[in-house]
Structure formats: structure tokens, C-alpha cells
Image (tube, rainbow, N blue to C red; front, side, top):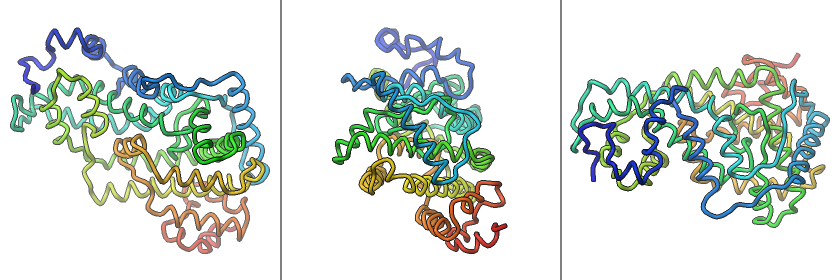
Length: 393
């Protein structure tokens, strides 16, 4: 059954009865909180993260252990790596996959909303430009419906992405992105499953993951200006994006409303839109991913510097790298949604940090976080000594 209603906002009565999403369509349409209906996204994300089978719960002891492990990791990092102390403390706690998904719909909003706003704007520009796509309803009419339904569609895609991601990650640090966090969550069931799957000591693995999470947070929160550097590059990248809705409109036109799961499939995994490639966008994206590559290299090296205190002699780090290389659908969906792929220069960034910490020590390498001018250029990533000579007092 194609999408063939005279009024795009008038849904069949049987669908209204059977599908809670459409039964509450007026509530969904009344959303006025921005380009993503985060209330709906939260419901979808938590539902996907929880799954059908009951997940492993976390205990009060888990909460206490995570809080202690993160604080211990912060002390190690400020001692061994000379990381600055953050200006404010955040609560660290254990979380289930569903807990993390619920938290992520707030934490990732600063990253998702700008891209979603570009998509919503592109939908508005489609109005008044009817183009026959070979079905029962033309693109102009679909676009008119999308203008009002856009926050719902963005919610479905965001919720599906974050819900899928929640089933893969041990915490926000795994995405490499700076999120808006009033809490630091460690997904303890995922950490324990990782330890069990690779034959690792559970407590040592929990402490090592806490160190990864703490190091990632300290880079973005304790070094002045690093977060600002990221978002300056990120917003420049988003401004360069050109959104292509053609494939999404085609999928919506062919959508079978009698099967609600197809709506989530069409808008969640494939997405409503794609990013058009251009030299300007590629350059802006590379500026973002280069910064993320250096953050990842610095974080990894910092954790390696304190790893023995956590009980790791290389096995946890090696297993973690293998797990990350395997990826997952949630990671792919997030990369597709915001349009940023894995850094191409990660190896160069790793060598840059390794070489300069060995040559000059941690205080010297930390100079790259002082301001945007001190950050290494692409050429300097491949020639670490040149950067060191440039920024050395």
C-alpha cells in the first residue's frame, strides 16, 4: 500500500487504533522544541536499548564502584599525565543500556540538532516544487506534509540511532565526540560483557574503562578552549552541508503504513536524507575529524600511561581496539546521521602524540590544547618535531 491519502495528515482509523505513534499524532505535531522531537526520540531510544529480553540491572554497589573508579582515574591522570583538574565535578554512575539511551537524548542534542535543522530547512525548500516521483503522490505534496512532520521524522532517526548505539557502547567516550553531560555514565553490563567475551579480569576492565571515560572528559572539559575548538569546526562543517532528500522522499512515498515498523526502518537505518559531497564539505569534515583523531590519540596515550595502575598490561587495550575496529550498526548510523566518518589520519595522530610525549613530555604536548593556533597542522602531524619547535617556549 503506498502513501495515497487525500489529506497527508489524515490517517486511516485502523492505523490510529493499532499504532501508538499515530494515535498520538496531534501531540507529536504540537512539538515546538526544535528540529527534533526529543520526547519521542527518548521513547524510541529507550525501547530499542532495552530490547525484548530483560537486561542486566545495576546495583547500588555498581554505582559506588563506578564513582570511585572514575575519581581514582582522574587522580591518576592528573598525576601521571599532568592533566588539569576540571573546573566542576560531574556525578559518575553505573548505567544500563536503557539508562544510557535516555541520557543520550539530552547529551547528544547539541550535536544532532544543527544537522537536523539543516534537514528541516531542506524540507521547507522542497515545498512548492512538485516533482513526480512515479507514485500516487508527488514530492511537493509529500514535502508539505514533511514540513509539519519533520521533527517527528528526525526523532525517529535520532531515537533509532541512539537506541542502537546504546546496545554497543560502554559510555559516551566511545563515540569520540564531546557531549553535553551533567553525569558520566558507564554502561556496566556492556563493560562486563566485554571483559567476559575477551577473557579479561572484570574489575581491572571496569577500572580501565573508567580511565578511558575520565580521560576523554578531561580533554574536553579541563583543557580551556578544546570544546570550543571542536564546536567552531563542527558548526563550520554543518554550515557547509548540502542535504539531499530525494531518496528519503522516494522511500516515504513507497511506505506501507499498515506496517509501522517500516517507518522506523526507513527513517532510522537508511535515514531520511543523505549528505551531498563537495570539496568544501570534505575540507570542513576533515578539520573536525583531525581534531577528533588527535583527541583520541592523546586519550589513548594518557590511559596507557596509567594502565598498569588499573591492572592492565596491554591485554585490555588490545581487546578494546579490536572491539572498536569491529564497529556496529549504531556507530554506522551515527556517522551517517551527522556525516562524519572515522578519521583518515588516526595513525599519524597516534604517532604524533607518541613521538612528542617521548621527546618532550606531557606538559609539552599539552600545549596543543592552549589555543587553536597551537593545534598541529596536517603537515605537522606527519612531522612531530616541526610542531614541537614551533610551539616550544
